[in-house]
Length: 331
Image (cartoon, rainbow, N blue to C red; front, side):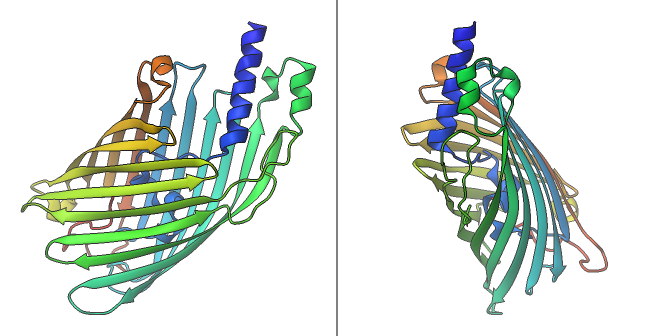
């Protein structure tokens, strides 16, 4: 048992040292400010709150659990017709096998500029975030002197600065297209609790998505996302279909079904199924990752289950209604 514990310890620490990569939700559209600070305020409404929970690889020790919550508010125009400022805050936590935790707090600020005033609308967003990341080791499971010497500190704090751009084009009759990118961890500092000088690598995110009209009540949402951090590469791509319900233009009621593929350094990593439901500003999402990589034998193919719950609200004094147009700003 002791030998097994030491092996798990070494695997966990070595993995973190080599990869040093941030988590990425499968439902990345539900945590847009984490993906790119330039998407703070990128929604049809006055304010938005969202919470996410992800659990994966539960057949390996206690698995990995990821939590996230963020809130955003707009200052200025709330109907998507003029310039506006977006402010937000986010809190995130990653628990790895019950041994190591990664906590992060972010404050986001944004400015969105409308370009041109014809029928086709263009919006350019420039935004930044500043926060503090904390990595922490649960020293209760350290059983030997060698392991204790391997750990320099039980916790460490690292400042985090990020910048992002987002560009959106709206064709009112048939499509909405947006694309952008972000760089996180612009401030480099020692980011390891271990007795080594390890820097936190920059996380570079590039994405594009569209909402295409396929019928009176049906829209298609293709999306592409790539994340690069250190030696790690991840690509997500796929498509979802959105069905507008009978009461859509009064309550934004719709159902969304999607299938996505995730690729890593070694090729195909997982296939992801997703369902999402929205009504009266409440958004519920559920997704499942099925492993296709070398971990599939250890996990029996079970990758992750992820849930999201969000709400887009309206302050009537500054925004009369969301009912005049479809919700354009979703992946």
